Length: 243
Image (tube, rainbow, N blue to C red; front, side, top):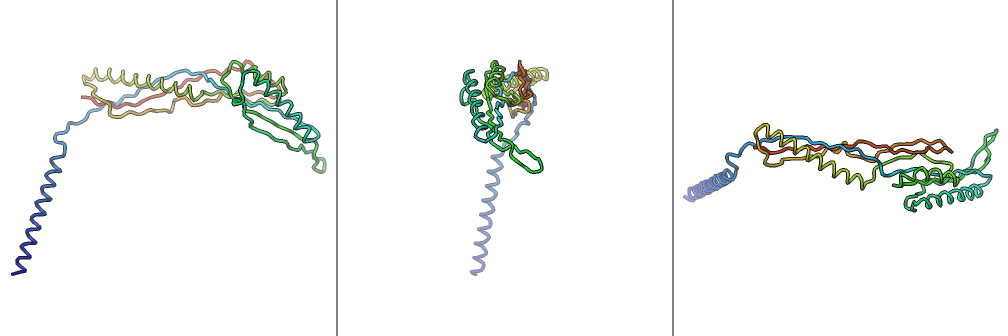
């Protein structure tokens, strides 16, 4: 008798659980979107292009002196280098625009059966970065006149501030271009744009610091120096929702 009661209780539990599972399934089903409309999209690309001139120049200016002793070479180098830096300051460059990039004092060897020290060479180079492109030729000429005898290639770049402004302008124009194309196409297709599904930016063409090397032989000044211009572009991909 007790076995029969136990079996009845088990059946009752099974039935109750089955009903609970069924109710949960009904609730889940009711929450699913019914008759959801198929979404139609229109994918359009927009682009913008500008011509940009660099606003920053960088060049290496240095002094190399040889003398019989290391101290003499160092002292003579210091005199010429200080005179060069003073000329740079007189032209309006600040100390933050002039950074020491190389400094060394080393023996100069002569090989005549045996290795002997013939002299000592003292080198001191600074990296000059400036936005005063109109004074670039003066910087080179007056540095050379002050004693600089190593002037490296000049490189031009676009500053981060200018890149940011340029990027915003290009993005605005590229989005406007995409919107114009989308509206025109939607009109021709007799559909209506109701929203934007996705958007992305292709920065492959966005301006990066670009370099234009101007080679200068030691002791010669390449003036005038022309930074030139370059074209930069940006594109966007926009997916519109239409109906």
